[in-house]
Image (cartoon, rainbow, N blue to C red; front, side, top):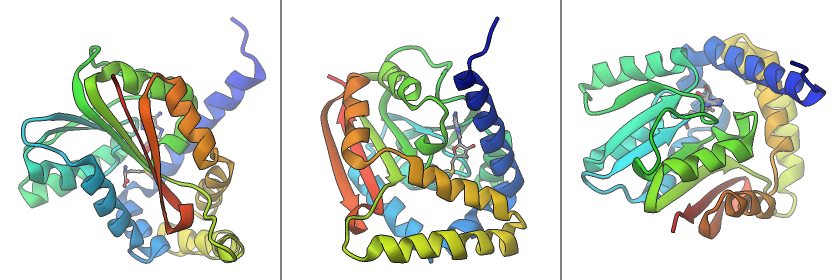
Length: 239
Ligand code: SAM
């Protein structure tokens, strides 16, 4: 077996991402508040409002981490499965669930690129701030399409690039100087947060990512930019 450079890079990325989230799992929720000034809560509320989970629906929250999206969706009595590659993140989520007395969620360790679920298992697939960490995004999108039922919907919340005039300069300054420092003080991990900021920079623009979703087989693909595209909700249907 020979590994091309692509594969070496891929394995490196997987290891790196794994180490980051294992390292920060216990402080992950605090870090999100600190870095976004609490804004991530509003973005997540808006995201779940778009998903409109219905009672009895089967929903897969992929890269669900500590369950922020799943806890919001389960309020509608949907059957929500939280899947994440990182058991430490899931464990923090499970602890939160126990503390809240929330026993309706299913927690499952899974790689977004290779899901154990049979074809057409879910009515909706959500992924929030997760796809950018996946090594082969095209493969994960195809898996999303495979596990959805016909009429099923795909929703992705992810950082993008704000087109607000003047915003990108301020944001660049903030992300390169301030975020790693917050990472250092709260999670004692400056490098990981540098890496995460870099992964935001490298992520495809909104129209390019929309095309990738279409390439995976989704129809009626839409983009909803938030704050000029600092964050974006991409959605599509399996028809
Ligand atoms: N969705 C949660 C939220 O919005 O708070 C967690 C987002 S967190 C920034 C990214 C998550 O993606 C981490 O929990 C990480 O373990 C997960 N992840 C990274 N690569 C993955 C993969 N290939 N398959 C599944 N999960 C993955």
